Amino acid sequence: MSDYYEILGIERNATKEEIKSAFRKKARQYHPDVNKAPDAEEKFKELGKAYETLMDDNKRATYDRYGEDGLREAGFNTSGPFDAGFGDLNDIFESFFGGFGFSSGRATNPNGPQNGADLRLNMQLEFEEAVFGVEKEVTIRYLETCSECNGTGAQAGSKPEVCPTCGGTGRVQQVTQTPLGSFRQITTCPKCSGTGKINAHPCPKCKGDGRIEAERKLKITIPPGVNDGSRIGLSGEGNCGKNGGRPGDLIVVLYVKEHKEFQRDGVNIFSKVDISFPQAAIGDTIEVNTLDGVQTLTIPQGVEQGSVLQIKGIGVPQLGNPNKRGNHNFIINIKTPKNLSSEEKQLYQKLYELNCNKKPSSKFIDKMKNVLHN
Image (cartoon, rainbow, N blue to C red; front, top):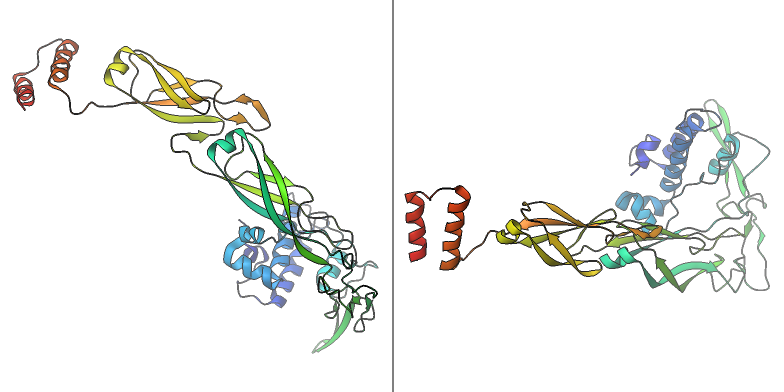
């Protein structure tokens, strides 16, 4: 996982001003229009993600405690501000800082379309459900456009009014006196958050946000062959956007329970089979458990401990091509006999004589007599 503090080159207790300063410096360095290195674009995207997260108090608190995965689980959009494009440097500084003395003639429109945030859903599957696929019905909570105000945030019969602080521009100018002279800084209007408008009479249903929390049920189809940690994206099933922006997506993260008998490696299944010494010596045909139920497995004569026997085509379906399946591999475990009867002990003594082509030593015979006597 990326360390946002390391990306910006700041301490974990850095102030917002220090975060801004670090981003401005590194943004100049890695913007793809300036830096033609192959990794510049990726580094610039990481800068945007780090800045956007650490400048938001709620996101920063979540990130500090749970990391990037925690942001996703909390429903925050972690794609970063530059996922859909970069714009030029002036636009970026205008958007992030509200100016700093740059002027490109264009400004980011805070009233323009804003895409909705993605949602994350963790789903646990049984081993067989992941192998063969399943359909699950889930209930999710999301943000939808307020039906009372149609997303405007204003009470019925009223309209958003021009912000008196910024005069509808969405930006305010601050002049700071320094030893080097006056410094003019244009920042986002704190009254209207850069929209240039305020709701003097906010909608009572959504409290002026334009969105309300709602629930809906979804049927999610899990395809055959998914694995632990697999992700399924459902386009448009996340939070609604603002000002005509597209809704976010629902990201389903799958967690697969372990099986008591089978282990999985890609599309192949492994399990252990216990057999006796006689079965290993002369061979046998036994029944074994598989994903497809009980199957017949042939034990060849003279099979050795740890040998792997295989039944083809009854493993895990290939993701995206369920007609093609892996194999089931059986690891042979030859069990050492215990608690032998007197007859079994005599037979094993005879086998010893035959296999070793000699009679057992007197010491071994005395030991066997003692065993048989007991």
